[in-house]
Length: 361
View 1 (cartoon, rainbow, N blue to C red):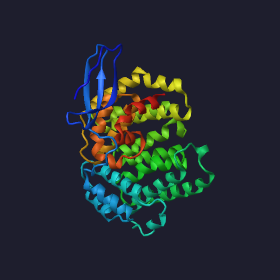
View 2: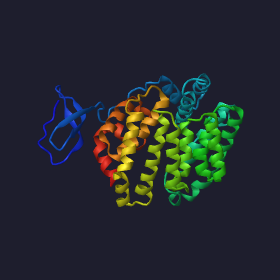
View 3: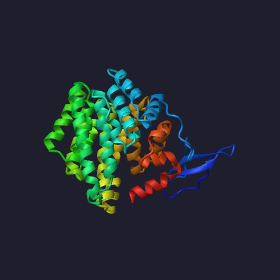
View 4: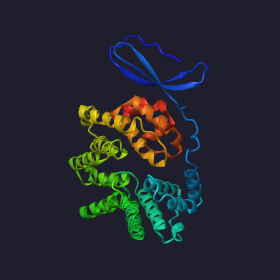
């Protein structure tokens, strides 16, 4: 497999579909410099191929049971992970996974959910998912009027269940991590309560990534905060995080939120391009990639989210070589990364160029 390239007037790159020596289709990232020197980086993903089995069989079991409105495997896993390295993050991931695959139109199916810390945590996360599913992802003025009462009542149910779970388990940070994020946003609670919920989560787990992400989302401009508040929080978090910690991906989240505000809310194309071309933003992004993500591998479910968020921001930034590396790492987990631009890129890596062009326009 090779490529021929005449001298170019400027450097560039492109994702191409080529054929190997056996005639099989392969995706590659072709990178060339201004002198015509070419480097070919394989992307080991076949367009539109079926998602492979997940590396974590527990994920498959939890998904299957959740689709059958069962949670036995989930609750056993939650108990066994207590005290394990990254145990809180793994438990949170499995709870989210079960809630996502439970029938969102059957809230009555949780009437028999046990009144335990695990049961109330799952119930709380389920009703968060149901609330936002009913509301949809549009801006508030585009949401159907009929959706608001159900949205409100679901989040109130979630809040009550999570607070009870937190009182039943004085160690688990996950209830408060959910409260300070999706619940606080949806119910538009007072700023002091948003902060109180966040501080309780990090008191229980100082480096909890879900809590930090939730806090940042409540500080962003589209939810009543400001770019300054959001970036200040992200920068302070990066400074306190240990060397190489994936908690530092909070900076990517802040960049993404500012881009999203410009791209989707103000729809200001010149400002969007200016932000993406800002050299400081690029330097910080690539520095963090090299420190945290480049050599980092996905060992278990707790590692999936940082790599998805990295791939998402790098895709928007147009860093195709780094995106190709991240897609290769994420490919085994594709079955649970179906949504968003990363899900689309995993499904059809040939779309990377068009995605970058669309997102930077």
